[in-house]
Length: 489
Image (cartoon, one colour):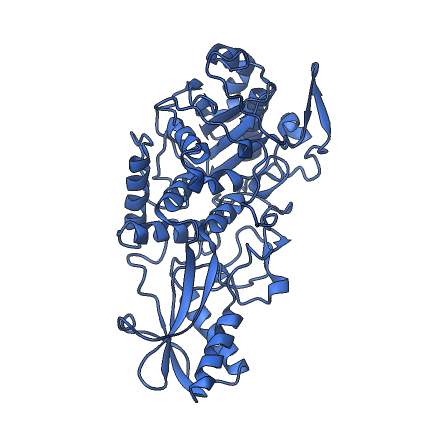
């Protein structure tokens, strides 16, 4: 942690990879068109193939593979000859931090090996984080929930001839056949594949038939969540209504590749209708239209069937790589339930800030009103974002590692796939930077890790507020990070 100067070294920072036994993440697709938290301006500079060639890049007399692989953090301390310095960074960054496209810039850079703050400006001043808020959500959820935690969607018995579909808070539950599921444009693997509504219906039908039942009345339960269904900035595209029961995140077209697809008005009702259709296909008669349950199922109601989401680590990786707002609010509510807070926007925010405080992350000036970062009312100082990254990378907290492995790779994956291209002037950092993007109207943020020219890992957070063209602002941010990467400071 930066506050204590604890030394940590982790090869995963150079080239993060899934946990042992996990295949390559399916959300590392190259067709992401930008961050989902924007008001019409998208993340990414739309440079397509200008993403670096994955070969050797030359900087002076240094050679570096892209992306960097293997251990990169020295075991030394701040006296290490390769340890960066604040003065060196100041000189290296020069006028890049004064680019007019940046508007107001708050930023912080720290040495990941020692936790030492190196250089910044207004690093303790709160700024609008946009989707970098998801770093806070991710860290808190992974700290509160066991690594094997999965979100269950279940079916329970009610009165004779009645069954209830119970939403557990998994927005990734899908109605699509397995071979049609895509995350970030890429097919899923075994570990990232979402739970299947068709499979839940099959298991339910099997159990019903075994009990001699071929006809049921279906209700559905959404009592897990409390408070408003709609985010304050709900637009029915960037985020769905926040309910514990939905399929395909409430998309009208579950196959849509759009970064902000149109969403259904009633995701829970859509999910129940989908389930009823699958039951009928299994030979079970469903009488009438599914109805919302008047109350939660009785304690001890017999479970008929269940399906479960990928692990919380995989959900966090997906959330960060694709900047998925609907999933972020679901993960935040899982944290709220674990912290014994109401599963609402307010309860989730309390759970996240409470757990961050328990981890020792400084919260001066932090204001959270959601888990996704859509709210402009959110405030986080750059130094806090750097501390979150330090906690996620520290050997003392291996449970937080999906925060690092879920960060998009510059020029290669997720919401950074179209950034750090040649037109931005930052292409030499492609493959070296892993970072969470954030974009709202007039706000551009980026927080993550970068390997400098001496193979040292640095953490950074850059937060801008500007009236400049969003693409110009993002390119200016990327050039700062590229200067950090080029620095042997």
